Image (cartoon, rainbow, N blue to C red; front, side, top):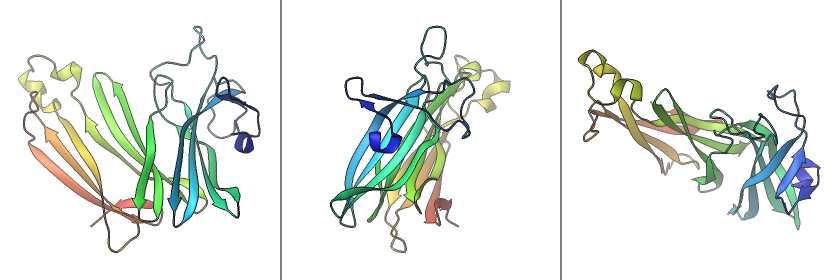
Length: 232
C-alpha cells in the first residue's frame, strides 16, 4: 500500500489517507483526502510467474451532516494494482488507483479473482442497484491488458419486478410492464483462443409467479482485442 500510494499505512485502522488526482472525474463534494482500504489481495501463478492482484476501495471520511458516506448512490472509488515476482523482487505490471466508482450505500461491490483462460486472470464484479421498485443485477469483467486495466465485459444478468406496476393484482393495461428476467454467465473453453468464451443465458418472465419463463435467450461472446464481443 505504501509503495503504491506513497503515503503511510496505518495497520491498526487498516486505512491509508490519500490525495487522489482531482482532474480524473473526481466528485466535487469529496474532500481533498480520502480513506483507502484493501478490498481484495489475490495471489495466483500465471505461466509460472507468481502474481498479486490488489483491489482497494476509498471514500470520504466525513461527507454529510451525520458524518457518514452511506447514501443509496454513494459509490466508493475502486483502485487496481497488479504485481508480479521477477528476480526476487515485486514489480508493478499495471496500476490504476482511480479505475472507477462502483457499489452503493458507501460499500464496495462483490469482487473476486476470476480465471479468464489457461494463462489469464482478471476480476469479476457483481453489481446491484435498485430504483423505483426495480432491482437490476449486472456483472463486470476487468483485467490487465497492455499495461493497463480494462473493462472487458459488462452486462445486466437479472432484473426484478417494478413494485410500482407489478405488486398485488396487476391491471390489464399494465401487464406488459410486468417483465422480469434472470440469467447466468458461464465461462467455456475456446480451442481457438487462450481466453475462455462467455455464455450469457437470460430467462424472461411475464408471470408474477415466475414459475416458468416465457422465453430464453443465449448469447455467446468471444475475446477480441481487449473486450468480449458477441459471436456471430
